[in-house]
Image (cartoon, rainbow, N blue to C red; front, side, top):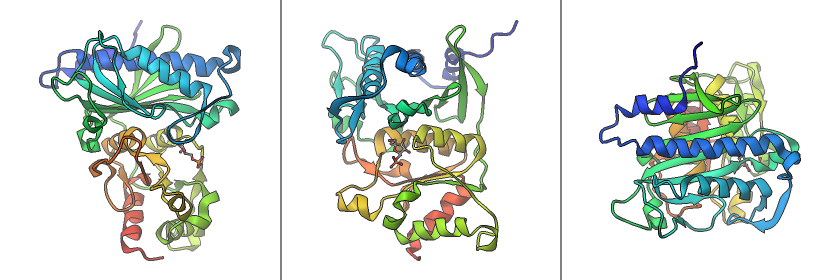
Length: 339
Ligand code: P6P
């Protein structure tokens, strides 16, 4: 009877192509997978284990933390802090960089994560996910600072997400294409179910929260209006719309059947002093790495997300990603500024 390729075997097989690979990278991804399996278990049990609902605390973003936001963050730390594969960790749920206990061994990687993205969907039983990004740690630094994390997305050594949906799926890139693994709960292993994922260059599906339409900049309004005009308009084809309010679910749909996801900046966000909603370091960068590795595009409207030099760990940016021809069209509109 065939078992299939487990995540661990896949990483070991692929690690052979990485110069100087010491097995530490495999250990790190295994730790992340363990955390994701535990989070998947709690997400799946929900009310049965009293993890739904909100806490009375807010994160650095000023957003009320769901119980599972806090628990998922704690599980990610617990899975990593004693195993010697990372030197430090940054998370959406923590104001500053997490430093390992003094007696914990230090590894050669930095981990950034959104432990539970889309958590507003938890209480309504809609898909949520964990997003992670891996950078090389500075050599010989026992407690890396925020500055050590502020590297452009092109320096990521790996990125991925775990989608807690009808299936629990872990999607990963190490810079050599995108692979998808599905959790077999019977024996607790992520098994390879899709390799060399490629996003169709063309699409007829867009994802944007249209409740902000009155705040959009002209180029975004022009792009969406043209999609809505359908076959009678300049695009000469009808479009479908989706909005899950869970970036991991949106990106997974786009990896699976194409599409474009837009979370642009707008006049309302700018009035609140924000440069976007989504965070560069642990949402946009990992998703941009994955999407580009699957032949898609990922921009902030003007430039490639992966080229952005970060200013601070919780920095927000506009995000437009997905089927390359659509992303390029939006970029043309944004650069020309024409309505
Ligand atoms: P809105 C979830 O809170 C999130 O960060 C992304 O996962 C999602 O795409 C977006 O925000 C949803 O934002 O404004 O539609 O609630």
